[in-house]
Every structure is written in C-alpha cells, then in structure tokens.
Amino acid sequence: MFKIVPSRNVGFTLPGGLTAVHEHLKKISRKTFKNLLILAGLTPFLFTRPATAQVMTAVSQTAAVATATQTTTDEATQKRIEELIAQLGDKRANVRISAADALGKIGQAAVQSLIKALENENYHVRFAAARGLGKTGDPQAIEALIKALEDEDWLVRQSAIRALAKIGDPQAVQPLIKSLEDESGPVRDFAAIALGKIDDPKAVEVLIKALEDENWFVRQSAASALGSIGDPQAVQPLIKALNDIDSGVRYLAASALGKIGDPQAVESLIKVLNDKNSGSGVRFSVASALEKIDDPRAKQALSKRALASKSKRLITVVIKIMVLCSPILLVVGLVLVLKYKGYIKKRF
Figure 1 (cartoon, rainbow, N blue to C red):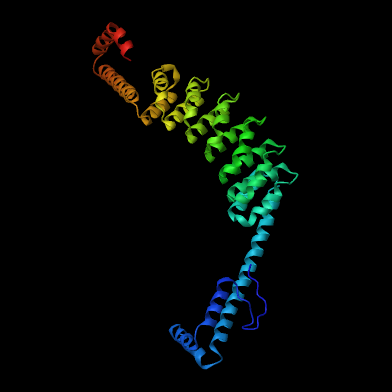
Figure 2: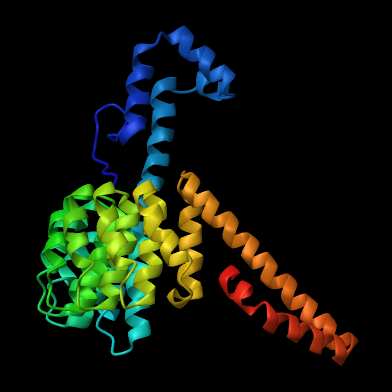
C-alpha cells in the first residue's frame, strides 16, 4: 500500500517509480528540462512557478489519487475475504465450496486468512480452507497444509493432500509418502494421486508397495502414479499387477507399462492381449501400451491382432449378406463353419 508523508521539496514522498523520476529530474540541467516540457506539451509551466516544483506537485497529486484508490481496493478485498471466510462454516456444502473457490481466486491476499481457518474447530471450515489454499497455488501455504495432514478428520487430510498436489512443490513428497500409510483408504488413494502429479522418484518404492494395498482404488492410483513417474524399477511390479483381480488395476498397470516403454514388459503384455478372459477394456489398454514400446515382438503381435479382427469383421459381413439374400446360403455357410470349426477356433 502506498504511504504519503510530508516532504520539504514538493509536499509528498512519492511511491516507487515516481520517486525515481523525481530524483532523475533534479539531476538534469534546466535547459534539458525545458526541452522535455516542450516535447511533452507542458509549455505553460515555463511561464509560471519553477517548472520542477509544479510538475512534481502534479505527479504527487496523481500519486495521492492512486493511493486512495489502492487503499479503497484493499479494504474492499479484505472485507470480501472476511465474508467468504465466514461462509466456510455454512451448513450448505455448495456454499462452503463456492466460498473456498472464491478465496482461491482472490489468491495471495487470502492465504493468511485461509491458513488461520485451518485451525478452526469446525472440520467443514478446515476442509474448505485447505481446498481454498490449493486453489491459490501459493507456496506460503505448504507448511500449514503439511501440518493439516495430521488432522483428526480424514476429509480434512484428504483435502490438504489435494491442495498440496495442486501446488506441486517437492517439499511435500515426504509427508505425502507418510500419508500412504494412513488408516483411511481415501487418504491413501489421494496421496498416491498427489505423488504421481508431483512426479518425484523418491515416491517409487512406496507406490510399488501400494500396488498391494487392500483397496482396489488405492492400487489403481498407485499404478497410474508409477506410470507418470516412469521409473524402470516399477516394471516388474506392474507386470505382476497385470494379474490383479480388479480390471481397473490391470488396465492402469498396462497403461503405465506403455508409458515407461521398457521392452521387458512385452511378453507379459502380449499374453494379456491374447487372453479373451482379460476383458476388452484391458486388452485395449494393452494394445495401446504395445504401440508405445519400440520392440519388433510388440509390432508383430499388434499386426496379428489387426488381421484377426479384420477377418472377424469380414465373416460377420458375409453372414449378414447370406441372411439377407437367401436362407439356403445361410445353411451352406453354417455347414462350412461346422466343417472348418477346428481351423476357425485355432485361427481366432
């Protein structure tokens, strides 16, 4: 905020850049100063009081107006922040969320108020405050958010993790690693997601361990995070995860292996690709992964699959044509299918 105090020279001490201008004007010669006034269209000042004093008085008056405006703006912003902080405790969830997001948009000016709100006795307020701090993206909030990872309420801990993920500062990695051992499944889940977003290799070991978490959604997030980090030491654990009971884990494990791009995963991926029981979604993820791995075995497997798929579509079209054209052709087609069913089963 600007501060104006009396000065012997022109009546004010000028803020920032205006003070520098004033000092510069005092150093130049009278002749140069007159030329500057003429160029600026301020020739009336040449015939009244000393030019420097008048020009600087005008500048000071402008600064005074700017200061008053800035003060008014700051006061209005602070009042708005106080109103929004009060709304963080509202009974309606949509009001709390809207207030938190609005405080986040205000940015740095709201950070200290939000940090203070993290100590409120109402867990709704603490939850929303953490969300708002994440929206600001301000590193000043990191220390308070790390402290909030120890909050008694798991929703607050989860909200703090999401905020730290949005800020993305590496100093949050170790506290987030600790959160992967939290008693709450959703907290462990968001910790894995956050570590993947921050993308720090120090998290690889604990994320590999999280691939065996009792909750499938934690295993999914761990697989996805390992793919984002891209460390080769995760390849074998991710290959093992291709056999997970949850199809979502298998899907994300395959995707992660594709991102890492290590050829040692090719054989395992091809095996899943050819397994009809693995599910179409998982096979699609496997095919996408194989496309990203630069290995001749992967290309060969994908070409073979493409040919088989094309043949299946051709057989489907032929059967439809037979049905439309003649029942006799359909019977002939079925006879041929039964006759060569061994070849068809082997081929497809």
